Image (cartoon, rainbow, N blue to C red; front, side, top):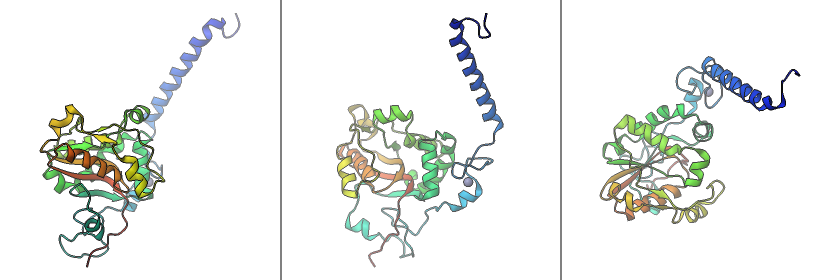
Length: 263
Ligand SMILES: [Zn+2]
């Protein structure tokens, strides 16, 4: 016999090697400290180091009560931005935990593509904090759905993961059947505002078996990022058409040019 035995034994040896490698990987995962999702430095606790945390820009008042975009100065209570007055959205109010920038983008990408589901409880807490007023009046949370093809490729929906974390903290239940993505849309990245709106046209629908979760209810739509607002608008319109009492929007990060006031 040669040193590897018969040729027939080779696939078996290969499998044994693979499972040994898997075991070694598991042992290393236990031994290695968790890495910061942004700078990849070892970190204790929740996956974001203090230095990167301090670079996040949390959105607090003063902001437009409708769109939630921050003002550079305080125009007084209840003032709306020019954007909200000129082009009011279908949804009632939008709130975001942080501005979309390099640090928050890294967190969102780690959750979405890097399988860093360990970040969800922390991000969910910040969402709950930013959406406290919305959640206090809400009947249910509606995660922005993925098309089944994208869901299958990515294995999980980051909006549903965030909604689950918010639900756990706030006690507001999730309306899992409320909304369906019926059109496979191209990625919104690189599209203009008008193109985004056209891209999302007819993409969302309340299915027959989801109507009971929508009719007459106050809903909070949950998503990871709000860019042009086209996705939130498309979802809100579909929910309102199906009889929702009210739709608010809660996202982790939003693109936020400083809002202009009408005064
Ligand atoms: Zn870091």
